[in-house]
Length: 439
Image 1 (cartoon, rainbow, N blue to C red):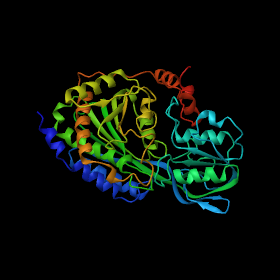
Image 2 (image 1 turned 90 degrees about the vertical axis):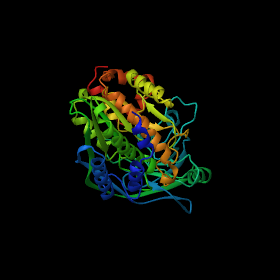
Image 3 (image 1 turned 180 degrees about the horizontal axis):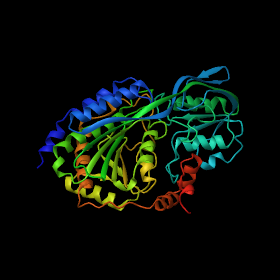
Image 4 (image 1 turned 30 degrees about the horizontal axis):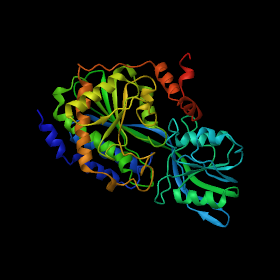
């Protein structure tokens, strides 16, 4: 039967929910807007037929930006504080270290204000995350960190610093647009500049959204996204679109519920943007052996072709390839690890998991984490097509005929080392294996 395909391709349920989420002015972790977004998502899941939809609260370190400035010469340059930056008034010589690759920190940066770009060159062998650049600056003794966007358009980038053990960073951190960064580098490299941040830090709560479809089996396929967003924009692609996809797929799965051999657990996280807090909270309480696979949607709908990062799980690669062949629709399935979304707290310990996104061809985040992550960048056609493919992928994974083997945590650690990611994860405090694995 293919009626569900036609119904999905004409459904407005996911797109209407996407509009509903982006119209909530602020969905920052711990905010009233994030709570409202969670409540309307819970209610929407119930409306499409999911059972036992509910919220689960957890405590987080709240953070809100108040003001930030860079004083250089007799000028004040526009910037925004990065989430979980501390308040501070730091001065030092401005040093532009380019892309902020590990080798770029092999110089005297003590008490300097470091300017690093948000992208990496094509020739470099791996992605260098913002938090790695920040903590390399901290370890080098820098007094402040300036994160320069590589995308044109006067768009200062946001993105959190901090670690699980120390949620607030150690030195002031701000984001500047490409244009402001280039101006700072050209006019003020070698001069003393001042970086000022004033933020509000407080205790609050976030919440995860849970619901179920299919048989009441102990094992489950997880279909996930996150509902929070940075406070500077709509958070349309990151990640209202992911939550809209979860809702649209849940609607289609409810129609095909008799085909599910395994329970599908719908899980929409809070507090992803400040360090995967919601997914880490859930992963810490789970029996990982009961999770058959995770289908995590973060960055979908931005373009037409799906990318399913399979993290070295051969069974996940095979399942996505079967769906692509059956639906006669391309799906890109990279086997490498991609440790920066809500699948990762589970994949770390060998749970099979995809990170699902759209192939935009952009370097880095593109419009993401800026004021320009807005609804007009997205297409209802792409949402519907991707919902069809992902519905079929979840059905495939939930079938008794599909085996998905877990991997030992040591194999994940070994792959991180082979892909040259281990050192960077250790720099940012995201390397858990020494405590639990005999290396």
